[in-house]
Length: 263
Image: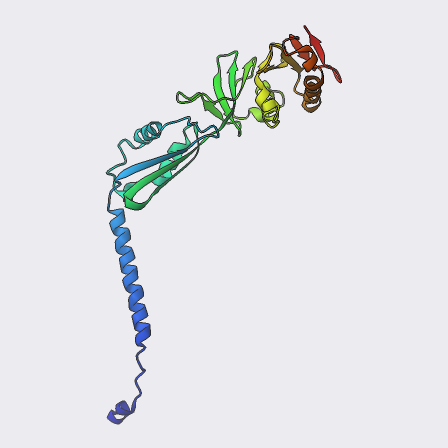
């Protein structure tokens, strides 16, 4: 037995492998310790970034964001233990705000809570006969009027159906038609800068009001928009320079192939 032990070849130790294992263990301990210290530390401050609209303006302020979080969580976030911060819930709370399209929250360096807000972009303002006063964004979401900024967009007035979340799915709906018409006008480089108002009269007809001149442009229905507005472009290019911008009270496009003007 003793002779066998004396002649047994013990495996050679791989010192390089041992060093590598020890390095990994030490690194893991450092990471676990850092994460533990991070969770047990406190939020020092809150950084709020609100992405401006295309106009460079903001519909809500930093104070509005802080107030929303304060109402939801009952206390200021500064001084809160990082492990207790519910960043996902913060995002959900902020995205319930009608001005907010998307919210992102995370804890960064130096225990700073970062809040980044992307706003809804208004594309149309509604002022209807029932007293409704609000915006629609590009996704047809309802956006209230902001006390911080008045968006310069096309205004729709008159006999417009009240807002419902499914208004675009309805077969006949004046709000749906107004939204479609506004988007059509904004997609055109000429009409997007030339038309300032869409009015719906009690007969359900659509009337455009330009920035220049005193005339009203009678569309009738929103069918055949491309044909109607192409006729109007030709009239403005070929006929209006001779008569002047103030020569006509109405420009009627309701009749196929015609532009009927009344002084």
